[in-house]
Structure formats: structure tokens, C-alpha cells
Length: 149
Length: 192
Image 1 (cartoon, rainbow over the protein chains, first blue to last red):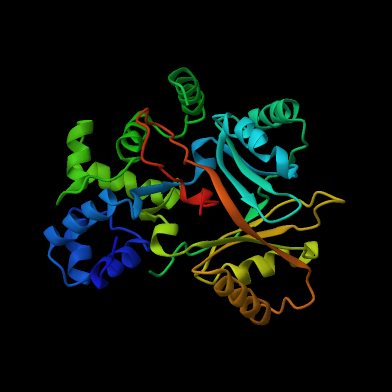
Image 2 (cartoon, rainbow over the protein chains, first blue to last red; image 1 turned 180 degrees about the vertical axis):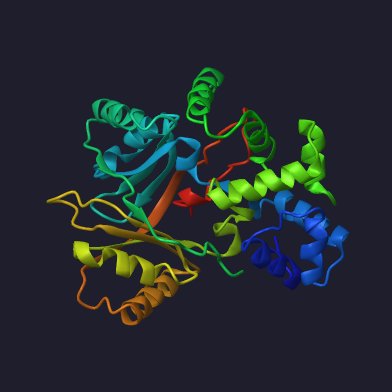
């Protein structure tokens, strides 16, 4: 879909945050010189057209008790589809990307219980026949999380 | 994810939640797939939960302050907005310089994640990971050159791993049994 300048301003502004006040849309609308109704209508459209995945809170997973890790595998090219299917079949696998490298499969494992990570990786290794390289986060640096559109 | 697995996960997550009370829990459930699009969204949530609007505002502000909520706002679909080149950029940094370089890299808008992770020797010497979203491959490579100059990274080995295919992308849902439309936890933006 085509985004106009107002859509872009809305997206850029709402990547920065959203007020927790009685009339938050009115506040944001005023900053953007829009009416409250127009802002709401445009957000509805951006969500319906799937330009936006979601509009709401982003949680810090660990503070809700979960655990995440990034895992790499080096999979033979002609075996890639089979292994991807195995990896994706685990509900704990949240993302899986093919990347250009000797380590060509990269996925994220998210579990509610940190102890479950190792069990999932062992199961994936047994089912796929490939080793998992586990690279859990050790430190996170603050990022602004904003892409100007 | 089937309902049984989801329900087991939710039970287990709930056990970890001793520090958040039942009202916080219900509130998270009410908003995790999105805020209501109406003039007083927090009043609507309050009605739903049977509490009053000031309490919702206070609780949300507290969750944000504690960092349980990292941010309120939009999650964009990068690809649809023209950010088609997605690269994982990894560096082999001496251990005592990781913090300094992580902070330098993460100040730029186009870096969407920046993490320290363990090396897996001998195959994987890299210990600082960041994600770059660019409009094209050339755009990403130019930005990397610029980063190298800005953060003085000339001497550090690095590698750029562009994504080829996205096989799966879904976010975790913490409280709700409604499967959202790819709800994404911002923390986990390994996404496109």
C-alpha cells in the first residue's frame, strides 16, 4: 500500500512511544496537527493493511519469566528444507532465518522455563542430526528501536 | 501451537509471575494483542477489568517504569515499509571492549538490536551481535562502513550475514490464548 506523509509521521511518532494518559490519541493527534478521529482511523487502516504488526505494549520477556536464546546451525544446502521443517515444528522456535554464511540457519528459541532451552536444543539435534550452537544473550545494549519511514 | 502446549506454557509462566499481581496479569492479558482504538483506551480496559481508569494508568506506568513494558507504540513490518535488507552484523571484540563498542553501535537508529553473546570456538569467534535493517544491500554495507569509521572499528574482524529467507516469524504471546497477528516482543526483533 502507499503511505502518505501523514501515515509516515504517525508511524515515526508512534515508534517513539505512546502516552499513558486519559486521552492519549488526542495528545498524539495534536502533536501531529491531526484530529483524534483521523489518527484513530489511520491507525485502523495501517493495522488492517498489515503495515503495522501491532499497536500496544512491547514486553521485556525475561521480566515475565521467559527465556530466549539464539541458535545457529550449519546445514547442508540440499538438506535445508528438511531441517527447517524439523526446527519450525517446535512451538518454542519463534523465528527462523536462512542467512548467508557457513552457519546458514539461525533461529530463536523462547521458553517459559529457562531450563527447557537445553532440552529443546537436544531434541532438535537428535531429530535433525546437526549440532546446535547456542548463543544466549549476555548483555543487551540500549537501542532506539526506530526506523524512519 | 496447540492449546494444550499453550495452556501448559501459560501455567508455567504464571508461576513465574509471583511479583506481578492478578490485576497486572489480567491487564497484560487484555492489552498484549493491542490497545483499543478509541478516545479513552485505558478507560475501556478499566471497564473490562472492573477497576477504574486511574488505577489502569498507574499500573501501566509502574510496569513501564519497572521495565516489564519496554515501550508502548507500534510494531512495524519492516519489509512492507521498504526495509528489505536485513543483516546480522557480528564482531569479534576483545572482552574488555565489548561494553564500550556495544554502546557506540547502539546509538544509531538503523541498529535495531545490539547484544553480547558467547563465542563458540573454534567455529564462531564473534561476541557482539547487532541487527541492521536497510532499504538495500548497498545501503546496509554503506552504513557498516560508516559505523566502522564512527566507532573506530577498523581493526576488528566482522562479518555480515544477510538473511535469505524467513521461515518462521511469530512473537511470543504471554498471557492470552488469542493468537495475535504475529504479536512481537520488541526485545526479540530478530525479525525482518
